[in-house]
Length: 247
Ligand SMILES: C[S@@+](CC[C@H](N)C(=O)[O-])C[C@H]1O[C@@H](n2cnc3c(N)ncnc32)[C@H](O)[C@@H]1O
Image (cartoon, rainbow, N blue to C red; front, side):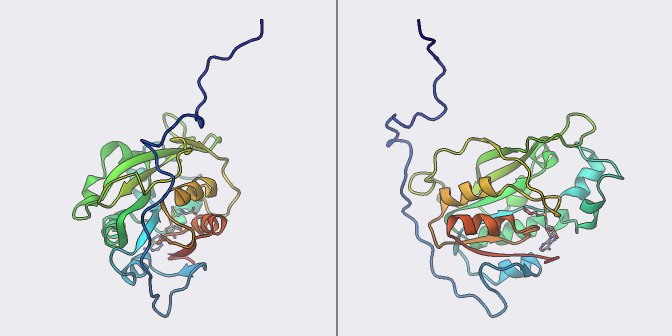
């Protein structure tokens, strides 16, 4: 008797999903006119708030934001590393006080039904970040955990994951906007070798970009670190506009 696996497939591609999922976007990005010091597909060195201030209202479909959270972790010890281990991280400029300002500016620049992918530390994920959203109308629509396949540090549990929260500007909808339906909410991708200690996964960011933008659209990252989002844009035929205060 042959063995029959009764486990249902994770993604049943044969099933008719037309009533729930959409594979076509009905949104188009408006044209953007860049000011003199800005350019696409390069590593700009500048203050992220200045980059956002140079962009028109309601103009881009996707913004990634990965703030420097370490200051809060230091005080509240939600799984952070000890003094001797974190020196490259401590060298990076802390950002916690500026986060609401960034989120406000992002809320202004996103086009209707556009997405913010906000990398979130465990402390804020558990204790709340709603006050950052005040006045933006951004709404949480999803969250994906990146499984790094590598044991990190932590006073209690040890960190193997990071989390990205998906927020959408109104009107909130998936149909006609979110077109990739094969992204699991636990994404396994090994950590790439990088001098930048906070580098995020190019594969996951590329999948998210494909899900909620069109080829040729402009994708923003105002605190780009190792510029992993630039690489994700190159892999998906989108234009990148981003910067880091440290270049
Ligand atoms: C967590 S890292 C980003 C890592 C990035 N997502 C990647 O995949 O490599 C945060 C970055 O924000 C930068 N940064 C801090 N304050 C900034 C500011 N006001 N404007 C722009 N960049 C800033 C830091 O230099 C740091 O590289």
